[in-house]
Image 1 (cartoon, rainbow, N blue to C red):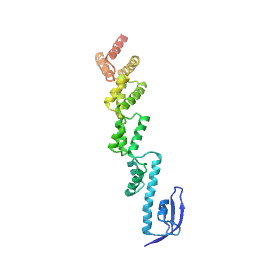
Image 2: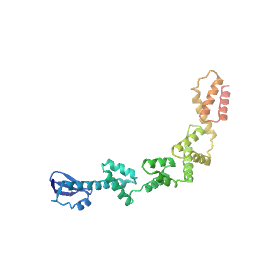
Image 3: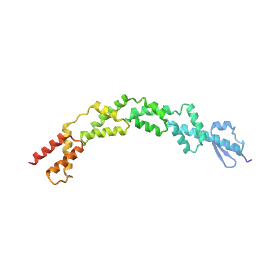
Length: 267
């Protein structure tokens, strides 16, 4: 049985205490461990006692790391576990640390999910499916996610959709009115909203076509397309141009108007 003696004890800036042993070994312990093991200068320690001190210190170190990690923002249990594993804290200590944090109401996946939803509704226009995915990757259980998303009612979703869609429609675009609407719909599908609610919101804001702007966009698109079209005769040329413009979302009557205008100008 090897016995070593504590030569020096000093407090570190971190709040921990450093023990200098006479075998050149150093230990860092919390005040709780210092008191629990009655660690004083000159005290002799066996190899077994040192191992017990190390195990107790690892728990305290892990707890301090977890508290520091939580000081920046709320965390899920999975985030705490992953963080402590990177710090090489044992699974047993991680379990104890999580139990302590829960008892102190510092670790609560339900509270985290509710906070995440509130923040998302205030600062973004994420739909419920994207929020579900984000929470799931954080380790929040399906039952908690389902419970929290009950607060994200269809009425709230419609309000967010209409507000965000109106903003997007105000942006200038070189695309046809139809393509703009399709782009907006796709954007909100990717944000996690259902097709049904997207259509409801679109109908509610009832976007109208600015005919003058639509005509200008068509002319620009037609002039650009004309340079790329290869045809044997004028009829084939017009059919190909008509097809390209229709694929771009322009209405047939507007396309026909353009083609007739081109014929008059050519004459």
